[in-house]
Picture (cartoon, rainbow, N blue to C red):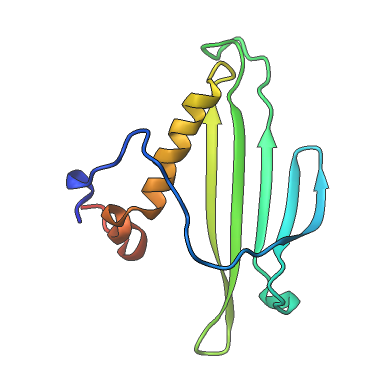
Length: 133
C-alpha cells in the first residue's frame, strides 16, 4: 500500500499476541545505558542484543523550553548467517525525543503511533521493499 493512502489509528490500542515470552540477560549498564541479550539458548555469536540508552534534558537557552529534549533510544541487533557462510548483523534503532513538559499521556500517544508505523500492514512495503511511494 502507498504511504500517502495509508491510515493510522490516532490513540488506538496496540497489543502483541502469540510468541514465546523470552527473558533477557543483563550484560552491563551505566547511569545512562543498559545492554541485554535475549535468553533464548543461542550461542554467543548468535545472541540477539538490545541496547537501551537515554540522554537527560540539559539547560539550553536556545531551546524553546530552555532545555534540550529528553532522548530515549533502543537498538536491536540480530545476527544472521548468510547463505555464503558469512555473517552479518541486522539492526533496528528506535528513538523518542520529547520536551520535558510533554505529559505521559502525550508520550503514550506517540508510542502508539510509532508501534503502528512499525507493525501496521499499511507500511509493510516501506519496511520490506523500501517503497516510499
